[in-house]
Amino acid sequence: LALFLYHPKTNKEEEGSSEATDGHDEEDEVYEGEYQGIPSDTAPRNGQVVADKEELAQQYELILQECGHGRYQWQLFFALGLALMSDGVEVFIVGFVLPSAETDVCMPDSGSSWLGSIVYMGMMMGAFFWGGMADKVGRRQCLLICMSLNGFFGFLSSFVQGYDLFLLCRMIAGFGIGGAVPIVFSYYAEVLAREKRGEHLSWLCMFWMIGEIYASAMAWVIIPHYGWSFSMASAYHFHRWRVFVVVCALPCVFSVVALTFMPESPRFYLEVGKHDEAWMILKQIHDTNMRARGQPEKVFTVSQTSSAVLPNNAIKLAIVWFTLSFGYYGLSVWFPDVIKHLQADDYASKVQRHNNVRIEDFMFNFTLENQIHTNSLFINTRFIGMKLKTVTFINTTFQSCYFEDITSVGCFFRNCNFINTTLYNTDIDDYKLINTKFRDSVFFHNKTGCHLSFDDDYSAYWVYFVNFMGTLAVLPGNIVSALLVDKIGRLSMLGFSMILSGISCLFLWFGSSEAMMIGMLCLYNGLSISAWNSLDVVTVELYPTDRRGTGFGFCNALCKLAAVLGNLIFGSLVSITKAIPILLASTVLVGGGLVGLRLPDTRSNVLM
Image (cartoon, rainbow, N blue to C red; front, side, top):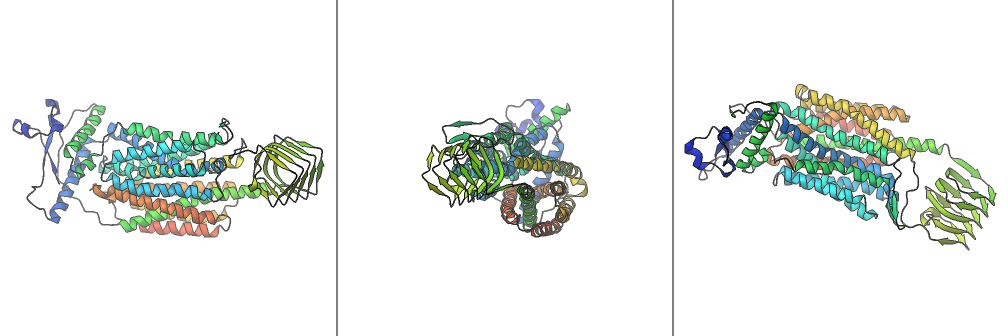
């Protein structure tokens, strides 16, 4: 392990200068240095190696203090922020496109749950894999590969037509973006001095929230309202939800472009023995910041300060990650589904019922919606260029009827009879025909593929709006956590934020209307965000440089596993009871908060 010795160069030392420092003029000599390593023929004892690591960490911290916090850190802040924003988009994109995609790509009934789970599984594997690779290959290079994978396959998924290909593209996109969180926080923390680390890592967390807002706003604007689409033949369709998927890939593309102009983490280079490269990047950080301020260049100075080796708290940290993720993602699924159930109950209460109706010699050329026809008879009736939305025919007979250019959603024919009837260019298939019999009836040019059929979907519009409002509620918590994380401490903010979030879950018992549920959602999101921000900071500071990416990747993979379990468990309880999800989320969050308070305080530690 090599240690830096900082001093101006003398003529006697010029012959030993490294190639990385050749060619500089005299004004740059104050930045040049040599390295004094441990002699190869001397095997250091374990205590000496630990002391050397502590000495290197202390000297690196002092160099960052000399470099200051300025233009370089802000440039990296926005480049990494775009990557973190992409992760926030990826988490929500599946939920937003699912109602449309499951129709457009012929998704089976069980496919919707698989789509949500497969993306999280991809993110889980990606977090663990790319976190470990970042400790071996480098933060910047791995992050560029991650974001490129996510951007390419995310963009490709907007064009594929089949369910299997769509599922594969989203899984690979999730595998790519899974590495973003562990690498981004490791990368940025390693160019921040101790007194700035907590605050600015918390500010960086805001980009995840910005990603949520971006995804919610784009879904709200594009999917229910945007009317443009085109078709090629009868089986290829490019509808507005696919436009939304393309738009959601843009932050990832911008992140890749921005990262190509940023260097590798100098702390990583020091850890793998590339001292010349690390020294030149530190020089670049110092130059960029000093010149932006118009200040004269200074010589780095080094003094001794105390440090402590952080204990192994991986189990406690894993418990906090799992409990916070399980409660957060479980309730994230539960909130919209509860609101949709409230809407469905209200919609069902307004259904129009028609019993024992006889209709003869009539033409329907308008939309039928939210109706149930029972024991009815249609004779010589024409259904032309119309839409059927949530319409059910039960024990109904169609005699000498003609159907042409029919598009339907949520439409079923149960125990019906078609006699001497023609169906031309309709989407009425076997799935919608339940115990239905045909006699002297024919189908011509039945529509192939799957079709989106309605320009306005109030239910989808409302879900996007609810998510948008819930995301906006995170903003105050983000600001508070960034301003106070270095003042009141990471652990206090982490533990009490989780405990208060758990207590706030109990108020969900009284949510009997959409407005009340939205209010509870905003309160919960506002309280829980401080826990997320503090947990990211603590995780970065607990792991040493050679295991920071791997450790953070493991925790983030555990987060995605908890998300999958939360989605499955809370999703299955939506229509059964409110008591179990509320008590489960509250217990898990409070328990995790108490464990979080037992983690070591890392506020005064340097990055090892």
